Length: 212
Image 1: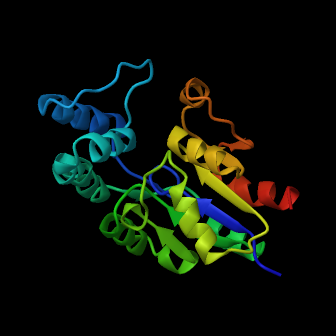
Image 2: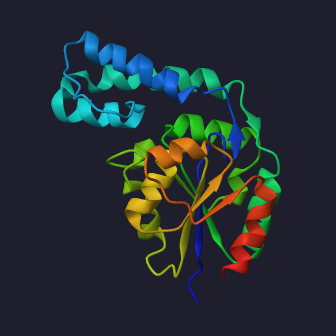
């Protein structure tokens, strides 16, 4: 029987890093406005993935320059990353339940592989999906297209993450989202629905087992 799949985010889910996603978005927004690219007025703040998506549509000639902004932040943050509590044992426990495990991150391949290798998490993951592997970043669900291509017969896919972009991507793909830590108020503002919330990764395996 095909295995179910548990898909994990990276930053602030499996590893903890000083990557400031709001700071990344502020720097990107300043760059975009400084280059004269109009940003539609909206109530919600612009996230980095949304800004990159807009630049690719409206000012593709600036895409490489704007992408260099999060890349610089990510390279710096990865030097100070630490392992999230219970990350390794959680991956082991989830695999023991019969799940395949995947990582899906908006970081690039260099950052993901470097950090995962540092904490010896690579052997615990069956698939790694980075921004180098997708056409659009979370909150778009395109990363799950890559996951489903690997496991086309998976009877169940769940996404675990801390951020609204993780939840929005899971919601858009119609798969359950498990919210780990993170900002509940931001989830509500963005209209993200969580199937469950956990305060510790060590609660994940029991939750998945209870919903088998």
